Image (cartoon, rainbow, N blue to C red; front, side, top):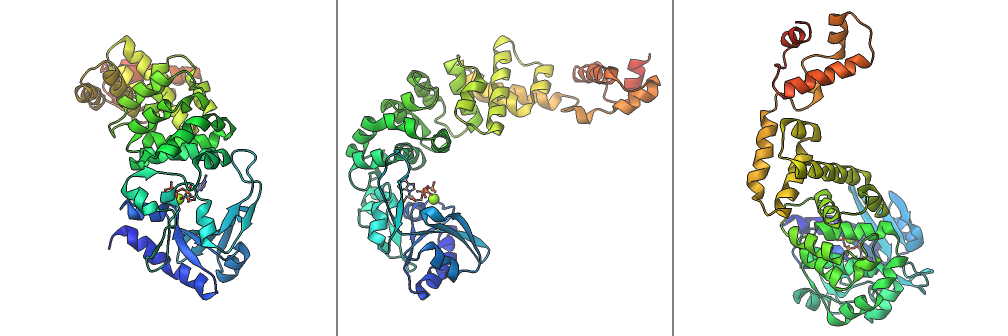
Length: 397
Ligand code: ATP
Ligand code: MG
């Protein structure tokens, strides 16, 4: 049995417990969709007619994560399960969140509030499918189609627009015509969605297998005008899309390519407007800076050492691609320089500040840092060996 079915099998007792208590419970959402697509699944999501309080009475170990929206996490056999009560969403007035949600006992009504037909399929513990909106048919035809009237669904919650493009990137599906038209018509509503939510979807667009198609589609549908700092940069986005179609590009590299092509905003301000995680911002900035150096000259020992391996490889990949040079070959040059460096970081120096103080019989001070840096540079350039006595000789001839 595949891993995927294992995940469902392991969760069957959870459904059984809920059923034994007199309620209904089904697998729903992304896990059912991905199982039908033979894609690997992360977690199985469960929908139930039991209300959150009732779920908490059935299972001794639970965590409240979103009671208001009907979601309780149940810990069972060492696994976490998100269990969400069937619900209908009330009126939407902010283009994102329903004003109130109502818990209900009907699966059909719950499936109706879900975004796309492929995400509105429920599965029983024995693998029977409940599919009132022909999600299986759309999956077979690789189509993203809203449940119900597309215009209504996107005006209710504009995040669904980003989700549609995200699924294009992840699943290599097309967007069904009415759904497509509604996205075009209501793209502007994205300005009502918090940057955090937009980023979460955009990040998935960037790393999805069909990111080229998805990014091109995003521009084709004029959505970039409503995304942070991207208005007016459709051309640059399309260029980025074409460059990154191969799976060799990491998220930070993709942002760097986009920023290099845009060649305008301070990198920092741009990425902060996107609420990009600090870890990514740091990596992008380093790649961007190294790229600017690389534009000025070929790689030297010092450039590679001080900018670091990952950063230099990333910038060389980008430099080569943007200048139509052989990527593999040029990246190899960087790798060779790195491999040939006598040391790869300051920690590998054969001496420390204490050695310097002993040798010079002097107290600590700024001179230590300066001297260490001088030694480091001489070692990198192979003017001295990274050897304690050789270094001493070099310092005190
Ligand atoms: P992933 O594989 O990324 O988890 P997913 O489809 O499971 O994709 P989730 O955000 O985990 O996405 O949501 C679970 C399910 O909840 C979806 O499959 C869909 O049925 C429903 N859903 C999620 N977000 C929305 C939304 N904005 N509007 C309507 N239904 C939604
Ligand atoms: Mg999910």
